[in-house]
Length: 533
Image (cartoon, rainbow, N blue to C red; front, side, top):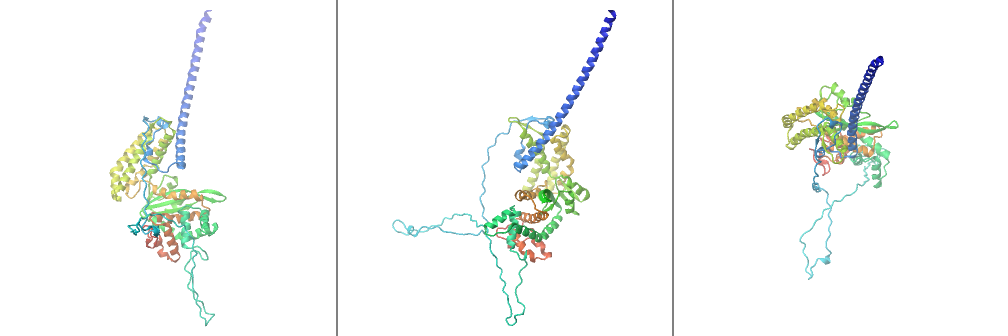
């Protein structure tokens, strides 16, 4: 009994110790599992936040307004993974602002507009008073209406009398030669060609609609004939495009961007690209067409050029800046702002009704907005490039310094994969190119000039959907370059192209620059065309 009683406590203690060890091990495993679960949960929250930002950005691009108004930036949202990592400041939803009255602008009729008058007078029998005294006209009341006459086709017949010597039937007949034509043996005239090109590349009508419009005038022009005419006119206009490229490359500041221009080739639709190269003084817009978005295309276009290049941070520009040190990259603050803007919009969309929280993206947007406010003040004051540069150094430089400090401080407290951390890292990684616009007052704060130029391509592809061939893509680039540059100089593109196509067949190569939009003499254009700025 003594041995049993002695052995029993030792056995019990060993079992208790083993049980405690097992329990400790189980608790450690449970803590490890909880930690792993928490890590996975945080990772999922970050991924969800990223996907939410991308979703709202895509929805806004597809269905929302294109502009990013400052009023929209006062957004509030419920805490997500990135808000959990930062100070959340609750606030009441913004008070409803009464709608401002709509200001309707009056229609302004241009001087020299053709005028057609008609008269509605009293019958002769009513031009007498009750006692038979003739009434006296004391004035005329005029009512103005705008009248439109649809475009009409005119059969233009060119007569060339022929002369011969009746005494010598075998002698050579004399006749004036036909003026140089755009397309020999064709009905195509300069005015018809200009109307067709403006309809397609300025008004964005596909050729089948242009075919229907002409058919309503009683003229049936097959679509394949219209295609041939477009290609022929592109051949005529290509030298002008080459000269536009030459004058663009002579500028010290160029904007560049690209967008998709679908191309039908090899039995499928390829994501070809339309590139927009823009200079602002003088205003030149040059489009180029390529089958893909490889960086070799922009390197070939800008080979040997030196200056400030404003572009987004796409990887297809990296080799350009490495291979050509003379090109100084300038960042686009509109792109940086848009990353924070998308986060703020996504937060607002995800917020349940009645809950409102301010997120870090709003602070970033407000600081970037201060930079744009300085630019607006400079424009309103009519600053010269030198004055704008001085204003930037005095006002924008401190804002940039404070914003960089803010970014570095906030980045430390954020999860690395959160959307806000990604937006801040995007700015800090490229900080030298973002502050480069301080060096020269001619350099813009953003790349919106190129983005605006690409809207013409975006609107066009919604209507004619794709380029039918490489030649079609090149035609789009050549003709749209001339039209958009003409519009940038205040020209009526129809009047401009009509005269250009009239004069091209007889213009010598040394005089080709006189037909460029920035050198075009508007005295012979339509009365509604604005003079060259």
